[in-house]
Image 1 (cartoon, rainbow, N blue to C red):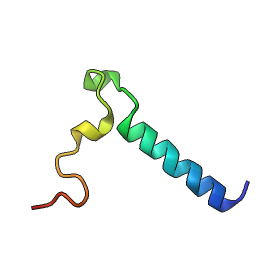
Image 2: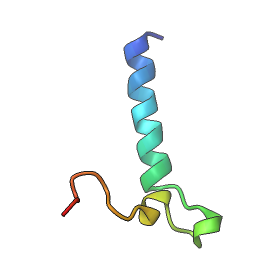
Image 3: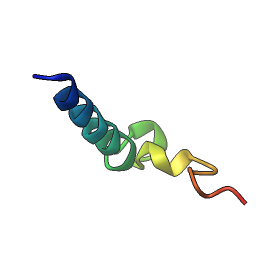
Image 4: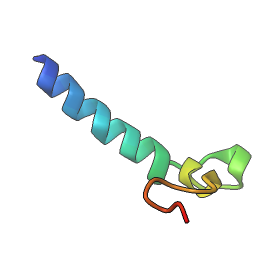
Amino acid sequence: GSNSERTAALNDYLHTYNYHRCHTALEGQPPITRVNNAASQYT
C-alpha cells in the first residue's frame, strides 16, 4: 500500500502492543502499565 496506509497500520499496531497485549514478563499486564509518567501526565 501507500505510506499513509503503512503509517495508519503502525499506529494501530503500537496501540495494540502497548495497551492490549499481555506480556508474560509483566505478569500478564500490557507494557503501558510500566510507564511511570505517561504523556500529558507530568505534574
